[in-house]
Image 1: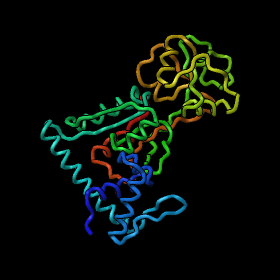
Image 2 (image 1 turned 90 degrees about the horizontal axis):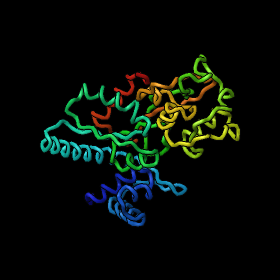
Image 3 (image 1 turned 30 degrees about the vertical axis):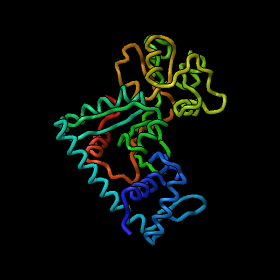
Image 4 (image 1 turned 180 degrees about the vertical axis):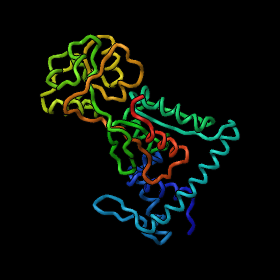
Length: 296
């Protein structure tokens, strides 16, 4: 039996997502439809493509070998589309990126500027997304790379660490602590703190810095993003704990940064699909990220 395009598409979606449910989301079809089609495909091929162990799917060696050929097929199709786009728009390819909103105001503009010096004809599409939306954009291949704080945990994603990215204190100029070489979290307890929601990764990180539990003081102002906290400090609304990359982004002319004793990191990572080969442009952009200093 020969595989048809639909069977190849379903097989590839399961390999990329690692599950029937993940494949159904990628293809926008029901889980039973995916299960029926892959079972029918295995029956007609006379091959077991996936082992079902405790409710999870594990690809067999035959499936992995078949996936190599399927990947090559999709790469060729992608290349045909790129050539067609280049002919239609007179350019040399396209790179689709996503990043955390704060990184879209700091790290990514510098990285893109450096990248364009090497690839001036490449069209770049940048989306600033919260982690959950970024995850879906990567899994559905709406973007090829995601750059975000801290790991986005998913079995279908690979990630590379970029920067340690320490948390620092951000204070208005003239603040009593602004002249210090370093401060402790105890120094900040009685300050008007600009903090973060406890259920977002950055908020959890700050809570860890204060020792966890109820040790963190109640924020006077609560925000969702670090660059908003910087803007509030610049306006004189309070003090904030912000990562080095964010505070090194736009010109925060009326703030001072001070290292924190025993600080924690908000590591920055780059993400892409685990089983999807990177395009040459995506790999070149990762190379740029690795060679950049995290601070201008």
